[in-house]
Length: 440
Image 1 (tube, rainbow, N blue to C red):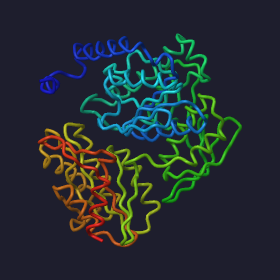
Image 2 (cartoon, rainbow, N blue to C red):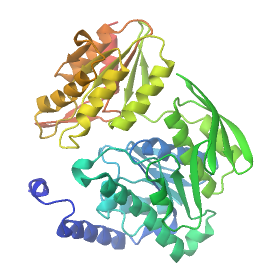
Image 3 (cartoon, rainbow, N blue to C red):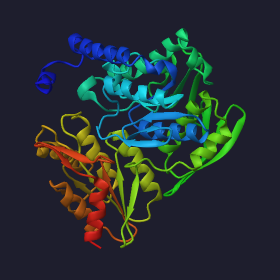
């Protein structure tokens, strides 16, 4: 019933927004506003926020802080890992407040929340006084919900306005007793940087390559990681990180800004970044006995795919075979864009099904395939449309030769796929392992 109503009631409908806010208010009051007794850190952005959230948690824990985290992938409380099986970046208000209450009982001082634009727009985070906010970027995504990039940006800005209000109130003695600064951490290269900068805050840090307060320079990349000089004020340290690509260096700079606001030294930050491992389902590498690799990644926006494939192309020594689909009941505009990006970046492209939800899977695949065709850079014999996702991945593995890279994007660490008939068990990494074993 509720799902049917959602299709006919606009996300901006005042009654719908009031309903969300009332639920959030009830949850906050019921659990006693636990966020007021911790340093609340919010991370938002289109791409990279999950990795950045995990980086922040790792750095703070490395610095011996009592820290918890809520991300798309998992939840953590002082190192204890709890998988996030909901497929939601930010949970319902009730579950958020319940988790915060548990963290408070576990003596957590620093709490990191990955904040989606939907959750901010729907007031799911009402009653949580954020002290620090970081943003990775604002790129094409969720226009099915927000309709315009400006509305999408405005939803992200709500997190920073929350920090601005918290900065004015200083409402909790417990929070003020924990060493930190009220701070914004902003991407100097993002198209909306100036808009976020105009929101009042006592401490603002911009980050970027050779610009901003936090800078990365002299960066070198390999398939195994990134090396760069990390600078803040007059201090510079070297970082040797296991994550490759400029976008992961940007994530590291964002995490650095948050850690600095929590009074962690630059030396400790560099040490922690050097021991940080990949987030599950993010650029996760599986090797074949035949000498090629299969990479499973969550990338599901045009911007994320472009960055991801650019990094791969710069270090690849042989062919790249890309398997690409797109999600149903979501932003339709991005589908041909994603097909085009993958076709331009690979030697062989296979378009397939992903998670159609209530949509016709064929229409989704055809939109992606059309975008791939428009590039004109890939011969028809190297472009395939295979409806069954398992068969598509198997085709890619069968075509792969020594030193090739097979890339499968869209599902990441998810343990189910939502088809027309409902969710089915599906762990992309386990599927890939099975296919590799079967074809070795």
